[in-house]
Figure (cartoon, one colour):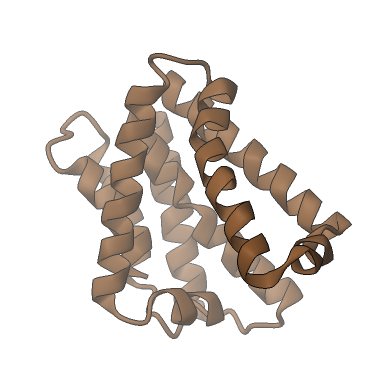
Length: 181
């Protein structure tokens, strides 16, 4: 779970105005989550600590780019401008490699709901970047590990160990302290 801990760490280097108690609690919670303890998704996405670290650097980088970008455009137009080039490349590429049937097969209610949800979540993230400091927003975004652990326990029937629960509680507590600082 290096990716999850890496992003707030990169932001907090040199950010001395954040609550150190919240930061330490957040980092302690994230550091205690092992790749195995984080469940299947982490094992698939972060097969090594180096890949996790690289993902953390990438997330921190695009967060800084987004923070700068929304100074020049509102959240929704900015998001559309960010995603449009990807769509203009991805859709023709999938069509050329797999055909129109493969694209049509993915157009179901679940895919559309996921797309709307992802778009909405990113738009809210951009609004948060406009209203708050990037380190605080990045740290709060990382609470997705807490939500993912809960959803994995409910829907994937993953076992939530005491260590995993303590890590999730530390992340939530750290974010709460950061929010109050």
